[in-house]
Length: 175
Ligand SMILES: NC(=O)c1ccc[n+]([C@@H]2O[C@H](COP(=O)([O-])OP(=O)(O)OC[C@H]3O[C@@H](n4cnc5c(N)ncnc54)[C@H](OP(=O)(O)O)[C@@H]3O)[C@@H](O)[C@H]2O)c1
Image (cartoon, rainbow, N blue to C red):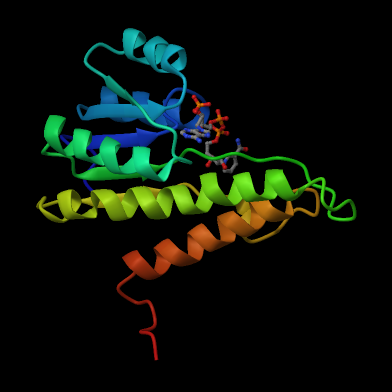
């Protein structure tokens, strides 16, 4: 992927790793758009980085992803990079069902279904660009799962596998 002169959407760009990525790409001369659920967090980052833009999105909401993607296509027709960064992690005790079920389902929705849905919704726009890229933030726990965060580790392994096959030209073809 080229590092400068992109139009980049970063989910979860109002804090942590997403904010770090947003500010780095902004400094390198890309138009950066950050998204998340909290307007205040987004405003804090955009006001510290002149020219950076933001759009609210709850990635757990399938219908919002559709309308959000239409808005992105309308406002930023040159969008060529999507960074799926938004994610959540919670401790789970697998010996205490059903206590962990609600958290486990939320983790799958945010970390796995969210990126799948958003990527599908934005793919037609990304495919129109000469230099497009999709980056998805996984975790070391995809490779060395943590017993205290089993569902989180599983979603990160799934994300790694899914996007490896989408993006790698060396990936084995399905039989
Ligand atoms: N920190 C680590 O050690 C580490 C290690 C490996 C991988 N990662 C991964 O790196 C990514 C960023 O994590 P981080 O450490 O920077 O944590 P973070 O600061 O908590 O960032 C997570 C971001 O995701 C957003 N988010 C959460 N749920 C969302 C939802 N339903 N819709 C839209 N946005 C949502 C949050 O914004 P709102 O609350 O405003 O929605 C927040 O900005 C995650 O995918 C995480 O799994 C982190």
